[in-house]
Amino acid sequence: MKHLAYINKYFYKYRKQLILGVLITIIARLFSLVMPKSVQYAIKVVEDYMESPNKEANIGNTLLLYSLLIITAVILSGFFTFWMRQLIINVSRYIEFDMKNEIYQKYQTLSQRFYKQNRTGDLMNRISEDVGKVRMYTGPALMYSVQTITLFLCSIPLMFYTSTTLATYALLPLPILAFLVYFISRKINQKTIEVQKFLSDISSFSQETFSGIHTIKAFVMEEETQKNVDKISQEGRKKHLALLRIEAWFFPIMIFLIGISIIFVIFVGGRLYINGEIQSIGVITEFTIYVMMLTWPVATVGWVSNIVQQAEASQGRINEFLNEKSDIETTIQYSTPIQGDIRFENVTFTYPDTQITALKEVSFHIPQGKNIAIIGRTGSGKSTILDLITRMYDVQQGHIFIDGRDVRSLNLNDLRKAISVIPQDSFLFSDTIGNNIKYGKSEATQEEIIAVAKLAQVHDNIMDFKDGYETILGERGISLSGGQRQRVSIARALLKEAQIYLFDDCLSAVDTDTEEKILHNLTQIAYNTTRIIVSHRVSVARNADSILFLDNGKLIGQGTHQELYENNQEYRNYYDTQVIE
Image 1 (cartoon, rainbow, N blue to C red):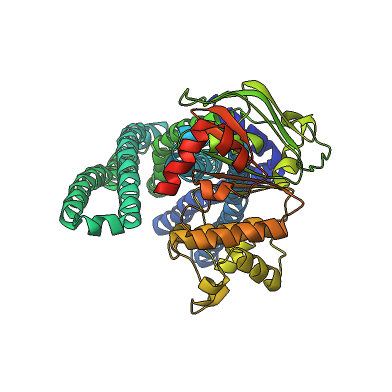
Image 2: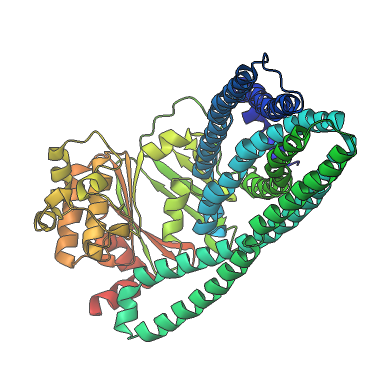
């Protein structure tokens, strides 16, 4: 239970509702115990009247009184049961809500390394399935535990007080029922985990298939894909049937053991009545009702036990992520405005997950307002420089200064708000084109959206769609071509009006003419901002104020295009190769 101790803070937060819920649960169960005794007394009245009829006795009024008592008790029990569920079950939903928010907020603070080491499906599962299992512990498990304890503490003493022998026989099958339910619930839990894993697998396979349907059709792999679906489906069918076979035992066993208890009550109770050890047949009816009332609470003993086990395991998985320390942290709470002067001093960086050294003793200075191009072959460390500027990672050796201050001494929110990034993979949300463009500036007007779309050379493409800026994009912007996605991302970045613009090879999918127009527009709109354009194409770099030429993680050239072409052989070879191609 050490993992579940984490949620005690939520129990404390909602302690008033929970305490009231527990009290109401006890009251509801106490009212439900009125019926068995009332039924026994009513039958005893009838028996006494049948044995010695008394015309003066108003048996009708007496039976009516007991009937009203039973009806009132049942109504009150139902009323309090309703409020019991409203309080305890609602609290479990509040706790679920708080936990999901806490986990989501934690996810947002974790670094790139964490997301590279963990699958998206696993992250989603912990915030949905695992939290759901913990909710069952904080709600139904708590509620049924209180109900069971209350009924046990009240009804069992009453049963033994009425007849020790009959109580012993009536209760004899119930521990067996509790054990069998516990055993079956464990098996159900094991099979359920297997089914959930299958559902995760088939969902992942389906998502991948639909995302890659173009490739499947291009390589005529429909038949092979169908075979794979059939294979996975057959495995799922077997797992579902295995689960259903075990679940099919649950209610038959419960009904069977209830029947055994009732048979014991009738048989043993009948003999006791014949022998004069109990004075009324009503006692047999009373015990029959007790058995019916105790059956489900006894069955829940095993069920609740499994809920607790599942919640413990799920909370353990949740705690793994909640206890995860972010590689990127900031202790700076005050504001640190950003201007855009950037300096790298002997920066060496190795990716923690792959142990690949991406940068080796790199040093350079980018004054505020300059337009810088970083070029080089694939894997030379270009994108890594942008990740370090935005503090997606922190350097292990060397220093990065922005406006003369170490980047780690800046307020992280201020730093990232001052930077507008267009990544290599232009991610668009399944929303309207207009909402995608104003993602970083939700209050933007339609005129502002259109203005940046024109600067990004995508306005005419958008207007070709029937709904224009209200066009709903498919998942990850699949409705658009690669070049259109890149240009929508550029428009989104320009709308942010940042101090530093980082363009990570975001013009690779556009033609040369469009590229020139976009670069010219960037110069016009962002002339007083720091712009860093990463690319493997030298055409992007020709008009830059300065070029950083990287190779294998090292800075092997720095200067204007003319300076590098005249004085750097590696750059000249790299440039000539692309021009000839």
